Amino acid sequence: MTSQLNIVFIGLSLSSSWGNGHATTFRALLRGLHALGHKSLFLERDVPWYAAHRDLPSPDFCKLAYYDDPSQLKSTFHDAIVNADAVIIGSYVPDGTQVIETVRQMVPSCLCFYDIDTPVTLAKLRRGDEEYIASEQIPLFDMYLSFSGGDVLTHLERNWNAKRAEALYCSVDESAYRNTEKPLEWDLGYLGTYSPDRQPKLEKLLLEPARRLPHMRFVVAGPQYPDDIVWPENVERIEHLPPAQHADFYSRQRFTLNVTRADMVEAGWSPSVRLFEAASCKTPIITDRWRGLEHLFPSNSILIADDSNDVVGMLENRSLADRSRMAEAASRIVMKAHTGRARACQLTEYIRSFHKAASRERMPTPVEVSVGGVSS
Image 1 (cartoon, rainbow, N blue to C red):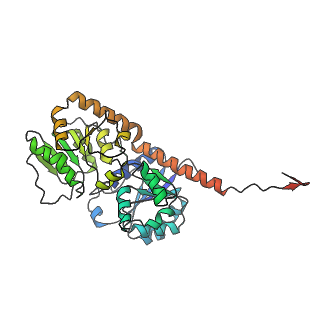
Image 2 (cartoon, rainbow, N blue to C red):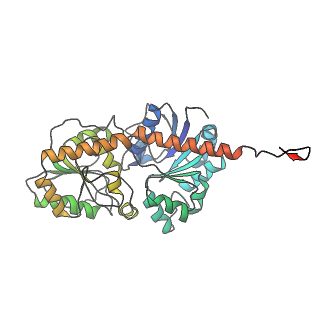
Image 3 (tube, rainbow, N blue to C red):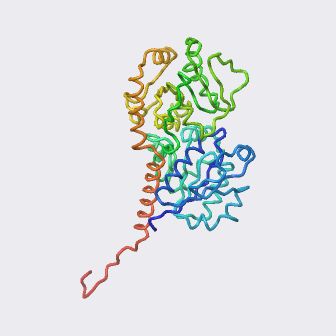
């Protein structure tokens, strides 16, 4: 295997960030791989809802190609798949179980599953929902790369028969996410697609504080929120915010709010990409509580809110000096360990270690030869 790796990704979307968090995660990772001198091909199902909202149709850090159905992966991309140092199939890929089977039959040298939704995936599998991966397919992968770390990895190996589970958290493109020094516009903001399980926390940690602090300004950006939500007058709504505008958005907030999906809170060790993005922009973060958070962001780098009173107190009582110290601490953490380049280094080490182990297994066992009655 050469020093330059050749990796094929089959993922939900790279071209469009509309209504999904996968695109920004893949973009940061693939940009990091490109910066390290590796080659990537990203294969994306050509679907109408992403085709109509493509904000990165021609990336300069990888090759991007589209396919119409799983069979085309074999008919059009067979050579790329079998010659790659690793093939990585992501979660939520349309017809994912069929995609996995099609790719597996081509016998790639290293087959990985990148689960950007690990707690959601496992919750679905426990319900018998095999939308994009079947439980019996998990042992077929050489590596299960998980959005969640901690004891989730042990759970994957012991209870779901993953051969090797490794944490591969989301990451941030530090060149795109930095403080733009725009004037502050909002006291607290939130960026995220509507999710029914997150909405009660958004109500508790943003909308109720907005009602209690009518002199302050709030903002919620993201698509698919139902029309029947009653937004307080001091809450601005932005329907969709493309990634190119994220840095400005974070930079204009005194604090930003992170809200974690219920399955991810239950599993723990599941940081949202929004945490890394906001920290990279040096925006102070208020987040809900989940297991493993303190290992990623110590208490001096982030604020944890359990209810509306906590948020109100933070907005009213935290000084500019406090906010600045916290934001700087969080930024240092992300710049050291959670950039796209840092994550790309992790991924390439995983792939290299797999190939080294596989090479050792293929080495012939020395045969004892008897010479004059003496083994040698």
